Length: 172
Image 1 (tube, rainbow, N blue to C red):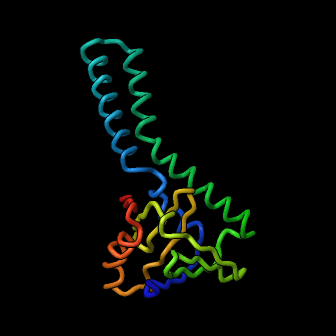
Image 2 (image 1 turned 90 degrees about the vertical axis):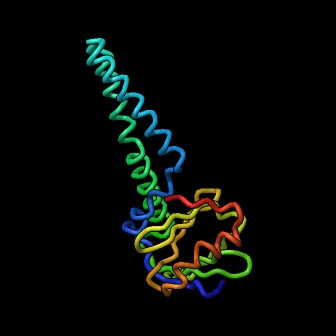
């Protein structure tokens, strides 16, 4: 899989673009169900029950359920940027990523440091407009930049990675 060699800059914009990887799909669906449930209870208490206290309570819950996934994503990408600044001393750095037989090698071009993320540790994949975001079971993540890939490689990337990582989950 050395054909997926990419390079780019890991910065706040790239991290923010891939922030959806932090909120699981099941959580977003559960959140929507609770939002609809609270909305129905809000309608019930405001139109039928004429109880303003319960109506306001369920309206408050609706606001919480509607905004929580966004707040959770923001918390995680700000934490990732803080970690990046603490570890690298800067909020962005050039990086290169490529796959070998053991896993994904992430190479920091500024410090010349490398790390290997083994295939069995890669748990989640999320696709954005500019890159693929990969996250391990231990909440480490890295990016594979699309601008270095051909159209055919972009189409085959997820399929090839799923063959190497059988428990890989795709977050949309």
